[in-house]
Image 1 (cartoon, chains in turn green, red):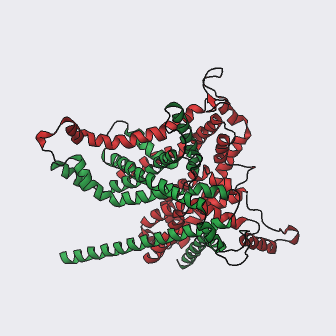
Image 2 (cartoon, rainbow over the protein chains, first blue to last red; image 1 turned 60 degrees about the vertical axis):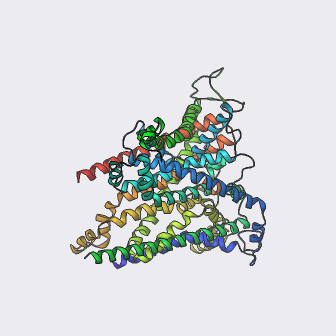
Image 3 (cartoon, one colour; image 1 turned 90 degrees about the horizontal axis):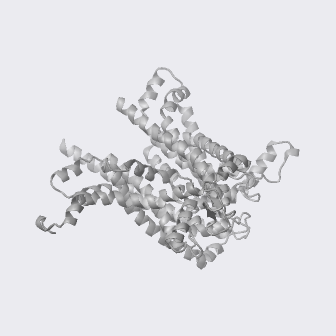
Length: 279
Length: 312
């Protein structure tokens, strides 16, 4: 037993080194004074200064945030509806197709989704004149479509774990379907809806491929801007940008983890106390 | 709120069926319009003929209504077959390496104390929340011929081999090796998480029983842990293999342009060559060869799994 444990611990160390060395290296080189991004030329914070005064990057970041906020919210509404429909309405016409439609985008190669959406938007502009040109609208529509299915998956699995009996009881007692939804179903799945929104938000904020196909001139999101710079090679200001991103995300995840951990501990303690009080 | 006697027909409909119908119809219509319809267009487009007009295709007229020339080209031009093979080989290697690295890591995660486990799981998920593009970019910095990482590897290589094999730097960028390495890096969490979820649920008393009966730890692993974790291996493998085989960003940034992967071929046909019908035909073939078989497999495996559970 002990020898295998040593092996597993070694693999864990190796794995985490593999995960974090590239990121740490990138962070160190963001303080590199040299223009050659891979040769160390002394300590400097000039790339941060040039980054924070670069209007192009700031505008792109703002545009990405706007698209992510809009598309995550719409995707959460549509995705939650789809999740409820799949988990609670067992029989309706076209259910098999519907179930297929919410799983297919999860396994679809992004390139194919990208060119398919672009062809749709071009043909729509040709036939019905809307959306007239590609840009903010088309990118948001595409983001809603491929991020809503992630919300659906989360909401669906959360609802499948909970008993439908409470909802049925409320119906039997005379509640209208939408009242049941408002007073029972939505409160039960609110954590799933929140994590779905966060996931949709991150997916939208991070997307390159589908945005690259569905965007038009003048609509440059942050990933598209990074993509066009990175294609030409390693540049020091992207290192600085990456460092800022990792710090923001790291802090966010650490705080979320801390809060969740504390909530879990409190719940455990409450459960223990309730158990002892009942004894 | 209106009393029962003032309910009009619309409210009655809304309360009885309408609410449910709306909940189903809104996401349904959205997905049909923005997901299914585009794919119908892709399938139709793969039978169109390329023209120099805008949009660059036409059906009928002086061209055949159903033009199958693009599918013929898929088989005749070995560019496409090679690209499919490159994709499958790269994605296959990436999946295998993810399994070899991810399995011991997932198993290790089930053996540490709960406090450590929470921290380590967070560290597995953390890179997933940072930008995918920036993670690929981090490796571009490491693999370049002037980087400290490349110099370190080169020094190690030169120390290891006879002097006439010595290299000034190891050519890593723009090779399939780089593609596989970065894919493993990017998709490793997708392998670790389902494996961990599966291994965590295994009954440890089985291990202890077989140890008590005299099995050595490695045999316990081969006879008990490994067979029981097959569903986790399959789930993780699919989560890595499917996105890896259609990957566009990684091969575009660190891959070899002489041996492109299929994602890059589709993108180039569409954007650079403006050949919509050909790009569509390649896409349809990719879906039929890779995605559809795997969806069917997951579907039937899921059904079989539920059936076994019911029987047990």
